[in-house]
Length: 395
Image (cartoon, rainbow, N blue to C red):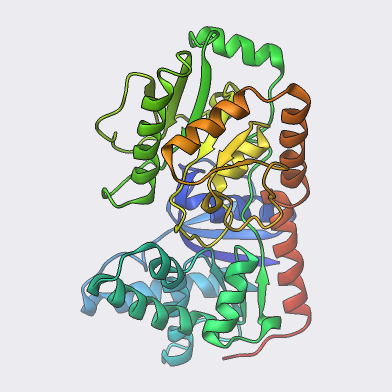
């Protein structure tokens, strides 16, 4: 099966916003699919992946834009993909409109699959305060997402919650919407041995510290951003803990701008390529996201904690999109109050070994059986094969 992937995919950074198309493309190619990717930067090489410059998506003056489309049309004719798989609803809408309206008859008889890894409409409705900006964002997102959901041959969503939202909001037949959950790469994130963990902690001078980890995005745009709110609440938590547990230290991992006002027991690591090592030395990881926060699928940072068998303290929002994750079976729950977060951290750090092991083993089993990219890529491959074997509508 020949698959053409369209995305703001960036193969230099297999983490962050690009993680979904990155790993789905990689594992689809390993399962024998012939995958070509239109991406920003090629980055690391994979034997079975072909890369093409994102010419047609570059900003162009209107009188030049048609040449970009012609470039893309030639590429599609050359590659002859069985499926065009689009990882962004705005790209999917544009592609579908071009297929429907263009005199060039772009993508004729080629099924287009729209990947709803999130919904700007859903997230803006819950995450942003009432304002003209939110109204405009919701209106624009609704138009774009409706075109993508209504006209794509198949819609892929990152969670069952998002699947229900797409079906209900855009009146899409249920058999046309399929869930392929977010995951974690078990090649990149896995438990290290106790000896290796002790060696790493000694090398970092953390052998006598209780290490708490919070992974943050590479970028945090505004004070209202959810990642900034998570960091600020942890500042309050660590200030509160400074007198209760003097050996506790918080490592904030991420390459974005530092949030000012951090207490002495908070350290920034900056962007770390080998995140697995830092997660493994942690005694505990936190997902202190605001309780009203909604996202399209499972939160990859929590899944990475689970894959490394690190105990997790999380708000309900941190587990959004992971319906199997029951409190105390998979993680320790908390509200967004800094005192309660501190109490739950202390309780988790003092938890008996058997209870803690049961919890991290349950979470790890969830990763191995459902939330890993290989499993997700297998699900996607089977669904694409089923779609092609069953025929598809030419919208």
